[in-house]
Length: 173
Image 1 (cartoon, rainbow, N blue to C red):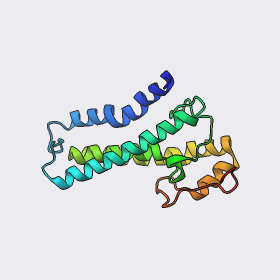
Image 2 (image 1 turned 90 degrees about the vertical axis):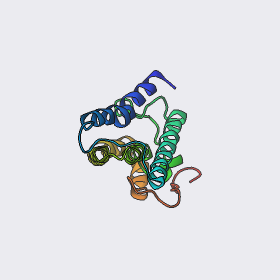
Image 3 (image 1 turned 45 degrees about the vertical axis):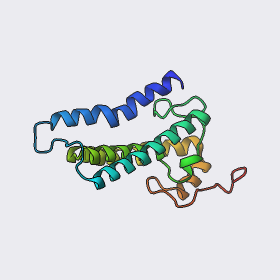
């Protein structure tokens, strides 16, 4: 793992999952919306851990794939990967890394029983939805052309496919 890749992890998921949530928890510490831990319900524990496991699996699988085939790029928009990736979790959903981060944020909100953290997860999701639609996806269309446009038509931004997508026009597709 390169220093640039580590920097992207510290800045991006670090901000979404550690720095901002810590600030939110601090701001709401002495209010009626303060976090409560541990959860007193097995259902809350189960839901939170299931969300965390799914989110972590998506983030780790996406990052491993970026490291394996990303041609030196990172998950960060200032140093993107140079190779179009439609493998692994990307065969099911266009943004598995961000989906994983949102699931981890939801796990934090559930496990800490925190409405302010749930609000942060919703805000983060909406902000990224706008960013992807207006900035990242048009850039990916310019960079990768027809293969990305085909991919975009068949693979949802946030809602995963039930079966993995294979590009019929790609070698081995």
